[in-house]
Picture 1 (cartoon, one colour):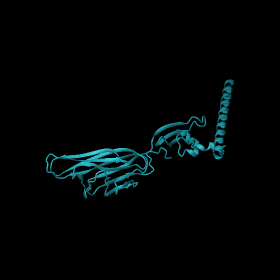
Picture 2 (picture 1 turned 180 degrees about the horizontal axis):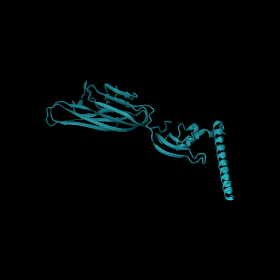
Picture 3 (picture 1 turned 120 degrees about the vertical axis):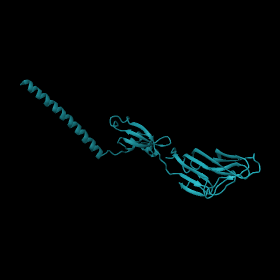
Picture 4 (picture 1 turned 30 degrees about the vertical axis):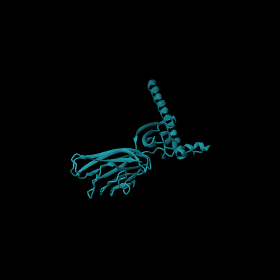
Length: 261
């Protein structure tokens, strides 16, 4: 009988301890709810207290996000070195230690402030050297960065761009069966030669040749790119007609946001 009574007393004591623990937990939850419903207003003591928020237009880390008021763990976009990046922020331990903020890098965001891509074609012959080749037909020109009248592309934003050119040239008839005829078309960036596409033929019959070239360039806003005949044999020229044999296309691969936000 005494053993049973002792056991019951132990169980009662254990239950009382559990109830006490639950009451304490409930009190903490009530305190958290009260705090969330009636947050303590932040009153800066000096301009230095708010200066970082005024200077940094975009957060650079989970710590910045926390200082901006984010409290929920999850995926966030932050400003990396020169690109927008996705990170996972773990704010679960912030109440225990404000210094501990978990940050896991996820990857880069394909963010562009403006879409840029174009595809243009020629429709007539062209034989001028060291002159940007104009184009007569616009298939698309999103961002209006390509001027078909001048043949010059102007980068609207700083970033990495891809360009591709291809087409047809004509070598007219010549009296010599051993004469070598050639034409070189170059891609230029701000007047600097980036690459050269060569087409040549040997013999006297009238013949056609082709050329193509691709390039990936890092451009700053305002930089210009164009295609031009660098040199050519006499009477050799870029051939085209209503079938549009010559093509120039390009697009923005990745925008560089460094110093832009």
